[in-house]
Length: 412
Image 1 (cartoon, rainbow, N blue to C red):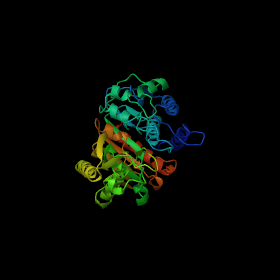
Image 2 (image 1 turned 90 degrees about the horizontal axis):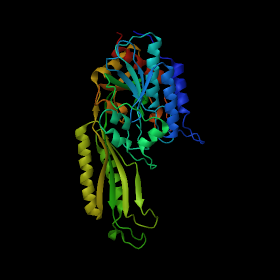
Image 3 (image 1 turned 30 degrees about the vertical axis):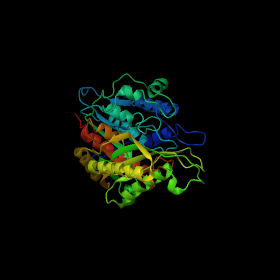
């Protein structure tokens, strides 16, 4: 068994340092893609890349790469590690950032140990994974893998009216490399689970073998505004009530199923949005997820059929806009097995898992064998300042990443 370890003090210290960048006066952490606060985080990551003696490269969509390219292996496809450093609003410090900084730490630890890889090793911080300011989410890795045209992505208008390409230029992270300029030999992403399974079962690590498919839609229901006091219930074209029926349908269907299907309505808006006026319009989002493509299509079809029923029964007009659609991803069996082997070698418990959240790994899996490693999240909380993973679990996960990298980039 290899007894090498990452440097825990360096990894945990950097996590804390990056976690302090982007705090508002009230202490809330927010680093939205291509914002001033994310620029500060990118600057710190770039500083650490250069301090580690790595080459730095930035592509046109703003993805940042730290590249260890030892002499004699430049022609080989690189092993890529990574995640993202942009956050949601009022975030925790681990989501995405842990994978990026652990990837950097693994490279530094291997360099310091005199490891001679058979191929370059690269750590990546992908642009706009969260999708809070610009849609869709996982944009940098989607563009990198060829799933979205780079010029179309750069022209994306954000929630604040800014244009992504303009903002990347403004903060100094509009690079010259074409996305995909490094085609990975393989990709590994270390991440907090963002769910309760590992903690609940007392298991140290997750070897992520697949990732749920995601269907995002925006539904608009048109009715008639009218007086809340004088209009009989039987004569209403109430867009708000119709929307409520859709939400209840989705919840009841998911709860009655013996599958892992989940459905969420996360955004909703009524017009005219007055307490004494029947809503004339309801606009809401639907997030459907399932690790099986056939089941996901079945859920989409069931929703479409129910919307037709609601339109007739409530005498409303309904339109649907597709926001995003990603098929389920099956990760590389060889890498998943390597994660399990590394866990056994370090006497750490491990189980195979499905990722319920979207990650950059699902995009890079389009162009290279990929897999993920999960570590426990306390109470399953994420996208929240209460997000927490114990230091020991963070170190264990990084050491497993180290071991898997040693195997996949075996010494030359």
